[in-house]
Length: 282
Image (cartoon, rainbow, N blue to C red; front, side):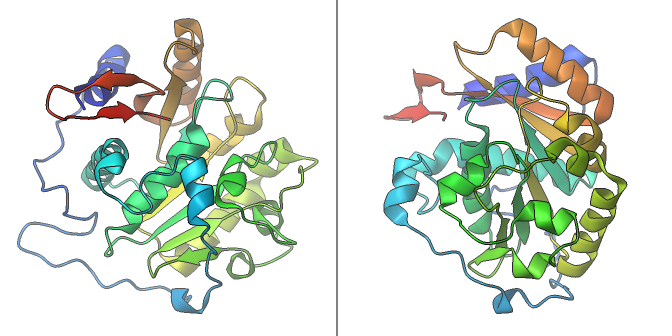
């Protein structure tokens, strides 16, 4: 697990923005808990239990390398990432977290799904994960979602969020796409209306964490307006595939728009000294 931590720390050091180390909280302590205090009651205008449930295909999730659905040994790398993300979010008051990558094939959508299911196991934390990569809809493909309306329709106010979002358990929501390509993804993501819709979603659903699966940074201009709507961003890069030049350019672009939470080295296979199995980052 040391490899992931080094990637996050090096990202901060490279920017000259060394931050205080996260508190030594127990990994099971959720975003809303404080020492000596109970988690706050979730207050939402929308009753999450009334929302349509996500139909989970376990075999599909296994094929798509979603290791955190059932937890256990294989989910350990993503559980560590989840804990680090939640610790930093709690420390800095962050709620909106984007996931980006320099190019496609870095495992960004797979990481988003794994993070969402990992966070779901912390029952006091309510999260919404949205597929906003309208050119590829990777998260939608992973989960097998299919509906007449998707997140593009929500952002354009054609349908309410409650009619699109799918619920997993009592504390996790997914905003997926229709599976068809959106004609004007850049214009939708960069619009002032999108900013207002996100505020409405935040006010109505009261999530503790919002994860946004966004398009690759170097493939289009989709993210350059949208990233100003988030508190921070995780950059996903592929081991032995993403060149340093693309990592540097991506980090610079993201840092101009929001805070870089860290860089995650994905698709990295190695033997851990403290565990008897291999960790695979996909």
